[in-house]
Image 1: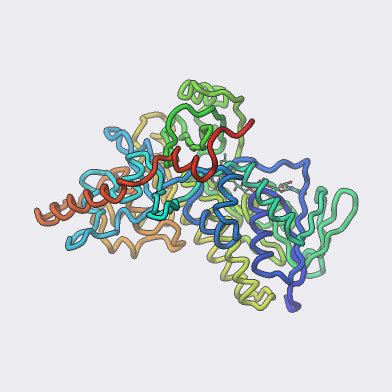
Image 2: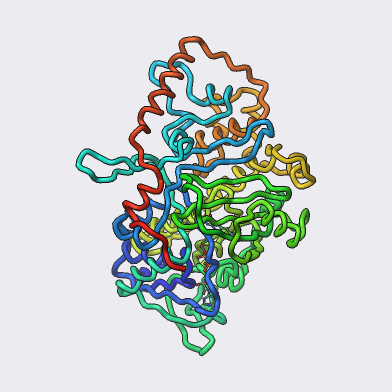
Length: 498
Ligand SMILES: Cc1cc2nc3c(=O)[nH]c(=O)nc-3n(C[C@H](O)[C@H](O)[C@H](O)COP(=O)(O)OP(=O)(O)OC[C@H]3O[C@@H](n4cnc5c(N)ncnc54)[C@H](O)[C@@H]3O)c2cc1C
């Protein structure tokens, strides 16, 4: 594209489309932005657990400050994931968001990963807060609440999308309602405009496809191939429900092994949501619902089923179309990476436009596509380790996973771990998307107790340092607020209606 971009059209008003439009508006205030969406095509309406990238993006990149975000969205903090998973003799393991495996205790020769290898438990500030069901919030001397640790949020899709709409409505971004029926193209294949069902045309120089699973422009219009992850990820349906909260609010997402998949549990101030992600090749919808309800007798709501395909587009940027969100790819939310990847792709989009001086240089576009593939494939690789090494239940589904899951780009790392344990040199075998890093992969390999031939050799001196380090961690969390207290302070007390 030789001419500078002056008009960008975003198709879709789910969280992906609205976050993209707001980010583009802040980054490129001179570009005319239009959001096109079809109220008859509902947004997906799930997407509740996030990584640490989400609070940073919302507060810093979108400029939505906590004082506005908390009372309107009513999130809760997430310090990591508790996995009821892995070794059947261990009830659970934690994957905290901070550097639980690599933050070396002072004057110790060994990293935490070696100590955690013995116990199978992560030790860090976040892990300690998770253990005690505390928030990452502390009251400072001036009475202000300070949030001190690595954290994500649990956010409900609907209030998040409502807040994003409020922000969009306060900008000059144009909003057009209508169903896109096709997209006239130039001779070179680039899209000229979106044609709506009433024959209106919405013209642009660049089009963001945030149309959800339909991938209306990238896959339907431009026929970009879909790369399936079915050799690693066997689940293809989720059944979802919720109930009013009675129990304390947990500062983490729970992922629990089920007979033909797994269940998430997400914590909101006033209610709890659960979803059973299963493989339809191993269980019927009826049997999955039965197992789901039996495990969660508190259900008040009807359940709903969401089918999905795991995989990504072969590229997310083709011609003058960039796909973001479910239009670009999807993996089950075991590590809650969907909004994380939305943010990564928005950043890639902004970098290409900004560093090309408002032009999309083919080399930058190719580099962005390369990074897109690395990011998504690393998520696939990371998830595959969860499935290959979970021995928590001995059912046909899990037996099949242990025998057959393709570890993809994580195979070399797993092999090295099985020989040499949590060596720092495992960093040389990490997949190169840099999504989870050494800490993430080690938390998983150590936490699941993936068998290793490595024999740990920890000196008495190191063990002493380790015990002191753990005590210090516990001491640091002494003044953390309980979740309910912190949420009532920042979101306001009481239940949300409805
Ligand atoms: C079971 C499940 C659990 C999930 N859990 C998590 C989680 O824990 N954490 C997380 O980060 N993510 C999670 N996700 C993913 C998350 O829901 C999405 O990534 C996120 O909400 C973004 O969705 P979206 O904006 O891409 O698509 P959608 O919300 O589906 O929005 C699509 C938009 O496109 C518009 N549209 C479509 N076709 C047309 C057309 N022809 N004309 C005009 N407009 C059109 C629609 O009107 C709509 O506005 C989960 C997803 C599923 C399925």
